[in-house]
Structure formats: structure tokens, C-alpha cells
Image (cartoon, rainbow over all chains, first blue to last red; front, side, top):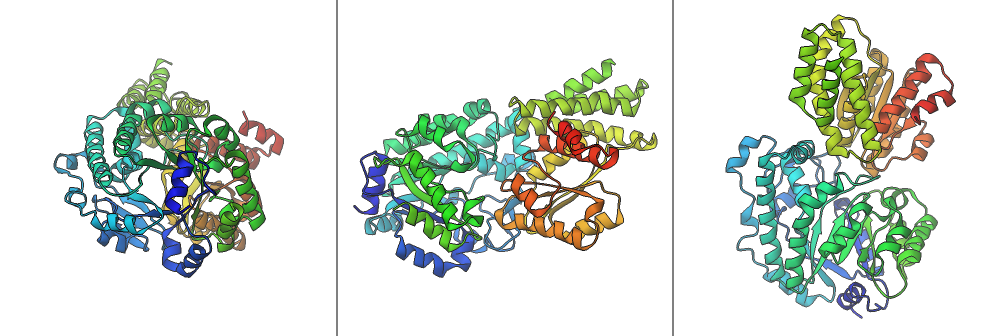
Length: 333
Length: 227
């Protein structure tokens, strides 16, 4: 089985020969520990590849992000980076003042007339399962544009400008996704961090009213094009896990270790593919290889019965020893 | 005390204008600033904390209420100072060196303010020396340290160590929080307490203040924390 076949078998519960592998190296690793990353890729070839062509990240922005200091993203918000290799935090949201909204436009130039031929070429040449770059992230984009605290207030107060902006962002992402669906990628990558460590950040009722229909629309377009929907969300998201499956997410990358893994498995195993992950807040940076192995085995006991529905994914943060990342993939063999 | 009820309800609804008007009217009608603070704002924010912990409120509702409360506090503060009303305690708060995240920190600050504490917000990316200087030169009961990243949470330990090295560790209680931070980590690095969220932080600070000033036993203070 090649990577593409293996991931598809996992998604369709068709008994892959082993759980597919996927590692997310944070910018720090690519910038400062590239040799270690390269050697991991040789030792444990990955089954999922990604096309780097994101609507929020033009070449100019990619060059300046993750470097200490500040930079302006393609939507006009200013990010501050405290440590090299970390993506940073929006400190000057472009729409903090609603009066700017009247003339505001998303960066349509990044996606209109976009040439996807090199994406198609890389898909043809690769035996990996190919993901689009990150597309829709409406909740996070609204935070980047308004500032998180402002956005929270908008959501509760029902500001009319909020609905206008939400529609604008949604239209942008619909067009972005439709375009990606004309390419040869296997899956479309969506994300939004919805949880704190303890529970959902917002009331599930508000989530269901405002955001769930957007995700449903994205998934419908993706599925109509014969592609898979892959979703990443950080935090404790157990309250909306079933909703995410209901709208059509095929694979969900969540912080399993903030939740009740065994309960998630009991409720949703066989209904969605668990796209990782490993505990990156404690075990990967601070644990021993033995603890890493035990964490992987816990996930395997809950989710890996050989039929599929699980991807051996982990993030590789700047402070994670390579030995721990190697142990993750070794333990999935 | 009809005014207190209207302020209380306005805070819970996140009605900033209602809170401000309610406080101004109460003051004009002769209510004392301390009474308005205790019966209106603090009582309301205690209820906000309870609603959060019971799962009825989430972060946006808590923030909405806290911002409304602050509009009332702006009106009340000069009166409280003029009347010589003491705060419940003084808390210095900041995100540690290398970390720029501030939403959690801000929320903790607002909730503590709503419980009657005076807040000194040092901002984000705060060098350990700044906390040390504050502990040396100003009266501070509690230092609250926050970090969101695993790569910066070690700077919490560094800050506590700096307080120790400067000989001021025993002058203040130190509490910590942030996504990767745990109770075990707090114990390991010698913090006085850990809180998983803004509402629990209020209870933690109250219990530590009891230990500090009233010399109550740990068990009694914990009873406050676990109410």
C-alpha cells in the first residue's frame, strides 16, 4: 500500500496495512532543527503530504512570520512574535474599529485566478495522500480580524457588523474551498480551535446556531467534489464532536488528551477517523520515551482495532526531543 | 436596596450602560460606594463565576459581564479611594517572558477586580526582574503568572526563582495558570497555587488571602477554595 491508499483505507475502514503516519513540525523545527526532521522522515516516511498554498499566507508573509518581532498578515492584522519559530499573536486586529468595515475587503487576490497547476503536479508525482493547505477557519479568522475579546462580545451582543463580517469571511472561504476542489488534492483542510483545556470556549448553542451551518456548507462542497474533509480543532471539544461528524468531517484532529479518550472511542469509533494526536502539552515536551509509548498504547487500545479510523499523527513542537517523536511512530508499528 | 438589584441584573446581562447608569444613580441617591461595590458589582460577579462553573456561562458571557462591571467600577473607584475603602487585596498579574498571550490573563484580572481586588497588570512578555522590582518596591499580596506555551511555561519557574533569589519570595503568594500548566507543575516549581480558569482563580486568591492575613489553617482556607 502506498500512503494515499493507506489513508483512504483508514478513512473508509477498509483495513489499512498499518495506521497511516503524519507529523506536524512547527515552524521552529523546520527553521532550527531541519536535520532532525529530515532524518525522521527517512526513518518513518509519512503518508500524508500537504500543498503549501494558503489564502492567509502569501510568500511575503511566510518569509516574515515566526521571526521575533512583528508582521502584517494578508488580511491586514498585525501579529507579534515573542519567540522565534512561534506563529505569534494578533495584537493589532485590522477591524478592531467597526468603522473600517465599510471599505474592508478580504485578500481576494490570493485566491482569485489562483494557479493550482503546481499543486496538481505535486499530487500526480506523489504517492502520499495530499491535503490542501488550511482553508476555512472562520472562528479564528474573525478573531484575527476583530481581536478575540471583541469577537466574544460581538457574538453575545449580536452586533449587525458581526453578521456582515461573518458573511464576508464565509464567502471568501467558500470560494477558496471550491477552487481547491477543482485541484487533485485528496482532502480539504479546515480548522478552528474551539476548546479551552477544560471545555468548549463558547456555548454549544451559539456554536450550533452560528458556526455549525458554515461547516456543513464546506463539507457538502468537499464531498460533492469527491474529496474528504479534514478538520483540526484544539482544546476540549467533546461537546461538539458528534456535531462535527454530523456535518460531514471525515477526519478530526483534536487534543485527545484533554478529553476522555475512551469515552470518545465508545461514542464515535467507526463513525469518523481520529487524526491523531499525542499529548503535546505534557508528554511530548516533558515525558520520557516510556511515557510516550504508554500514551500511544492508550490511544491504540481505544481506537486501533485494525479496521482503520485512526491516523498516527503528532505535532512536533520546538521543545520536544526527537527521541519522543521517534517513539510515537515506533509505538504505532 | 433596589439599586443593588438593578446593578446586579445589568452586570449579569452584560448591560454596560445599565451598570454605569445604575451606579451613578445609586451614588446620587446617597448610597455608599462600598455598599454599591459589595451589593451590586461583587455580588453580581460572584454569580457570574457560579454560572461559569455550573456550565451555564462560557468565556464570552463571562467577559461580557466583566466588561459591564468595569464600567461601573470606573465610576466607583474615585469614591472608594476618597472614602478610604480598602480593596480585598492587591494582585500583580502578567504573562511571563517570551509569551504574548493575554486573553486568559485579562479575564483573570477582570474577575479578580469584580471580586474587589486591586489589579496591577504588568502586561505580556514580562521579565522576571519586573515582578521582583514590584515585590521589592510596592505592596503586593499575590503575584499571578500566566503562560500559554510549553516553551514559555518554564519561565514561570524562572520568575519564581528570581523572586527567591532576590529574597522576596516569602513576601508574596504566587499563583499560576495557562493551558499547559497543571497542579503538579505548580507544586514542582514551588508556586502557592494553580487555577485552571478565571473563576477558580478568584476562589484561590481569596483562600490565599485568608491564609496570609487571618492566619487561618490550610484546611480552613481550602474550604473557601472548595466552597
